Amino acid sequence: MTKTKKNAIKYSLIIVLIVIIAGVLYFFYIRKSNNTNHSSNSFVPKGAISKPTNHNLANGNSSNYGGVSKQNNYSTSPSLPPPSAWKSSSNNVITLQSPIDGSTIKSGLSLIGLASVSQVQFLLIDNSVGQIAQGSLNVVNGKFDGTISFTPHSNSGILQLYYSNPNNGAEEDIININVNF
Image 1: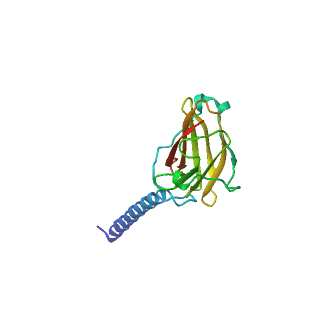
Image 2 (image 1 turned 90 degrees about the vertical axis):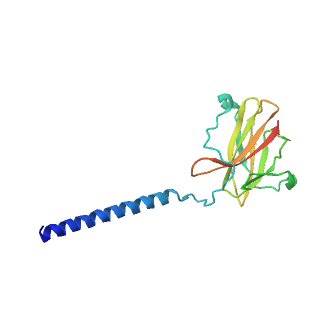
Image 3 (image 1 turned 120 degrees about the horizontal axis):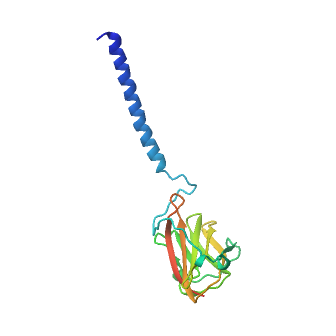
């Protein structure tokens, strides 16, 4: 073999080796960047988790469907039940201060609480027809306070609050309380 052929083979092997190394480095870079939290909220809580859920209106009836009618953001000093009655998520990411478990609620109710995330979501489920209200409340300085509207169809239901993970849509740190209408 001539010296030129040996050099050509040598350079070809070096180029192939460089391409392989670059490919491996690129693969690990992409994998690392996909596992990095790119949201503005670097805190991703752990706790009660569900898969992303498509919440449907009660019997598809949007005329009786409620949601957030006003974000209060603690504009007034609310009268709260004692802390022993508050309900917190498993990792204390969300604390519902009002209403409390077993409360009788009506449209115009204020959902009041504390959270270490930027937004909390809620669902109000009527035991007769299913979901009757859904919405989200912004968290300002660790607190949320919003007025919700709804039309009940029975005497009882469940109020659920949770954090919706922006990375995968999963409902995390779920709180459920029983309510009466």
